[in-house]
Length: 76
Image 1 (spheres, one colour):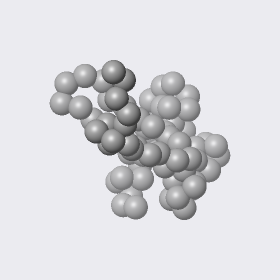
Image 2 (cartoon, helix red, strand yellow; image 1 turned 45 degrees about the horizontal axis):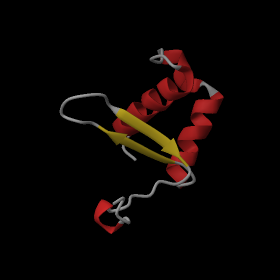
Image 3 (tube, one colour; image 1 turned 60 degrees about the horizontal axis):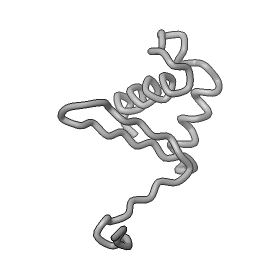
Image 4 (cartoon, one colour; image 1 turned 180 degrees about the vertical axis):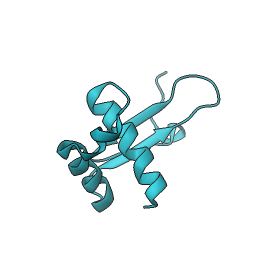
């Protein structure tokens, strides 16, 4: 993971955890460092979806799966 990407992920994960943007001293917060280490080793996944218009979506989860809607059963 590039240092620039790691800093951005740290900022986004901190915002998810604390509900605000981080200050410089917040990047040394132990729970944040632990979450980022879990992302690095693959035990947590971080997904960010940036739409052209609308809200940004950030997900932090142990597992993320995608399903093709065309393979789902019909609701009819």
